[in-house]
Length: 402
Image (tube, rainbow, N blue to C red; front, side):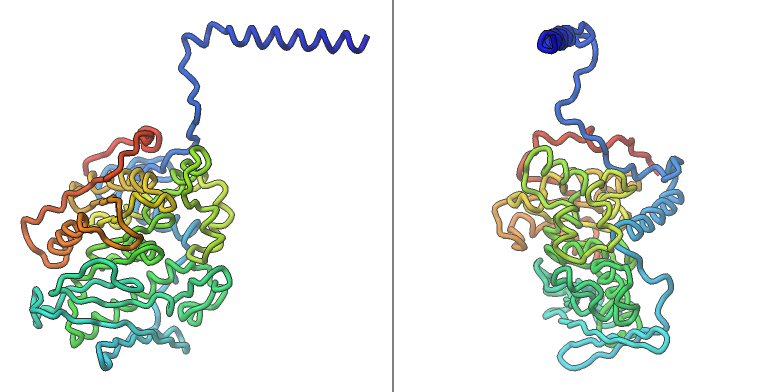
């Protein structure tokens, strides 16, 4: 009897499945997408309380909200008040020493200043424009622009998970401070600029500063440019995850399409660039009110040139393409789209700037650090097409005009 009932049940389910297959509604209803995207990128033009961003003043408030969210959920917090004092001293061979005091504790770090080999724009009276190179310079610096090499690992170590809480930032604020390495590096560059502003004998014009870096230093350059408003030009190079690529898109590339792209879930197991609070969100990125397009957008309306590499899947070139298309909508809304550029070439090694990208770097430096007029900085290109990428999958906002 039991056998007969089981056979009857199977026949019933088979018939029901057959009827479901023949459901006439299937012909008149929208097709079910084969790979649904459950979380699009966060709208830069809508506050968290759903109020729209309509004016430039609104954008400044939205910018402050994004800045807070990035610190709370991803990067960790900057100190809430400025240090007691910041002093600088120009030593031999271009070494610039910076001492930061907080209460009765002080720490010191150094940066290396290399002055131009030819006459610089502005001359001795106005000071010389400079690129702050995070770690080491990996882009061609014009001979009339200074290079300031910033040793970020003095500020916050980044040699794997055991290095959390190590470096002079943590000597000053405590080894348990929840700031991740990237935001601590940003703090360090801010203190460097504080000191440069007080010491014109360095020859540097602290109002004409750019920042650049590649790979992990590119992640740092992006965060520094986003959180330090005195930086006029930001050039992150091949920064990938945690820099120019969006977490949501990278997750989709890896988990849905099988492309070997670094994701949030992997990167927090590699190093201590982010605050510890980020760990609990890496498996549910879609719930966060931020993504990397909003980190880039914090730089607007200042200048940003993103240099990437389509030849390395790990960097997530398709993710970078979509992420920076989303970020650029903020520059478009502000009426300064030509201050934001993206160059995605291929055929070169990691952190080796190809010849095709050098004119873009030169143009951005000419316009935004040397104040040259009539320089064309309109660039947004990829050498590789991404046929499966569609804006509508990730961007569901209209671009206002402020």
